[in-house]
Structures are given as structure tokens and as C-alpha cells.
Image (cartoon, rainbow, N blue to C red; front, side, top):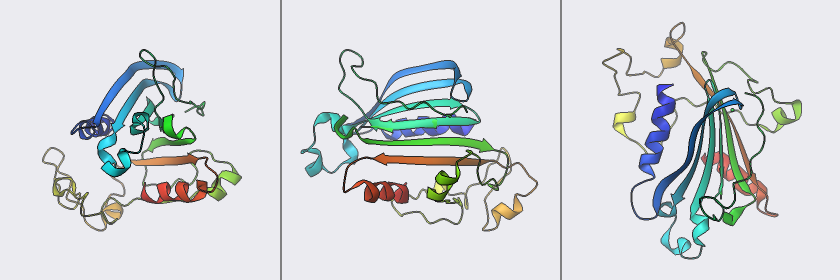
Length: 223
């Protein structure tokens, strides 16, 4: 749970530096009888202009430089959706498209300039090493479309531009818990100890003829 609070705060801080960046918080309130039962709902707008090349940014309307996020946090389930942000009248002229989630939830992300584009992530946190194969109860057809990707926080490569020694689990040691650094066989060594796996179901929709499959696959690959 502590990491769930830390990660969004870190992301907001990273998005709030430099011109054309920042995060607007439109809503942050508890909910009941919603995704996952009871939890915390947040509604944000990310200004992402600083992440887009200047030559391309000059061609886009201002609305295309905003990404809207809705998130339902009901640990151990979360749902998040991202969409392009829409034009606003007053505080908000148009809420982003919102699909009804399955009982259980993660964030949703969308963008106004690209209204047929969205990313949705559902997350379940389970006290295991990732052995469950269908924690989201997908249908047979959905399972045929999915790609399973197990993330190894020690062995998986990371680009030089994103690498931070202070966040490297092969180097970090917690003086409070006595854990770390992690070795190559960290997962095998963790058997029988406290362990949690974050199962994530990522859905990408880019409904533009001629580009849909290529763009959706690209986002899955780099995401």
C-alpha cells in the first residue's frame, strides 16, 4: 500500500517540472459500491507538452498536449484509464469516456485530439510469486489475444537513460527491513518469505483505420 501512494506522487512530481508540464487534480474523493467495492477515486489531467519534440508540438492543438487520467484505487484491486483530455467549459466541459469496470478496479487514460485512443490498466495485488494464470477471469477468446510478460525487476534490461543507481534492486539495501540487495536468483530465494505480485491487465485502443494494429502493438511493446 505504501508503494501505491509513493508511485503516483512520484509521477506527479516528475510531470511538474519544466514548461508545458504539470498535473491538474480535478477530483480526489472516496467512493463506495464502485470498482473493487470501496476505495479512492482520482481524476487528473497531465500536461505532456514537455515530452513531445518541439517541431511536432508546434503542429498540434493545445488540447492534444493533455492526457486525462481516471483512477479507482480499492486495494488489492485498482483500475486506471487514460484518454486524451477534452475541451473544458468552466471546470470541465466534457468528461472522458468511461467504460463500466468489472467488479473488482485500475486507472484509465485518454487524449481530445485523439478521441479514439485510450489505455486502460487493471491491477490485482496477490501474495504470491506470479503463478496465477487467469486472475482477471478472462474468457477463452480474450486469453487467445493476450501476451503474458513476466517482469523480473533484477534481470530485465533497462535503457541507460532511465537507469538510476539509487533505484537498482541489485544495489539497494533497506536498513529498516534488512532486505536487499537482490541477487540474480532473488525470486527463488524469496520462496516462503513475504512476497507480493502485481498482476496487470493492459488494454490499448487506437481505432484509426490502417494504423490500429501497428500502434496498439507498439504501445504494448514499449509499455
